[in-house]
Length: 89
Image (cartoon, rainbow, N blue to C red; front, side, top):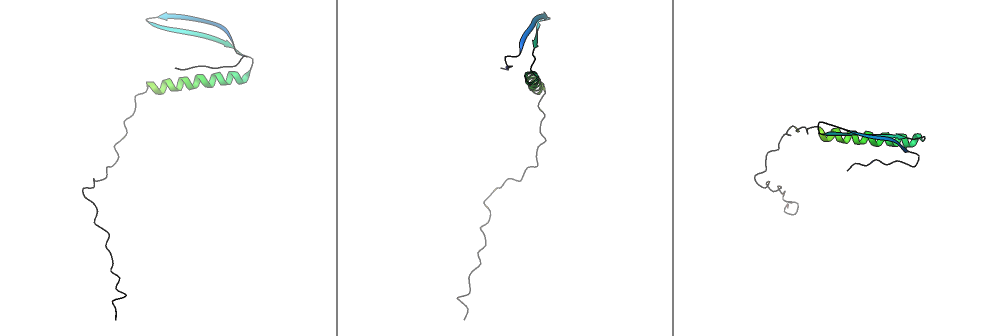
């Protein structure tokens, strides 16, 4: 659920509602003297608008990445070099 929060300097000026073809529209008019509260409300509304637009967009399918060949067996053991220093005459 989306919420809108503002300070004490913001006051409700008027509100109205209309319904057409099964859809309802609510209009709220707010009044403030504080520029910081105005900026905060506008940022919150922009964030809500962006979230709703993102939710309405169909998700793009990512291109399949090149698949690595599946490993079918364990790799060969590391070759060991014999220490022949002690065997030399």
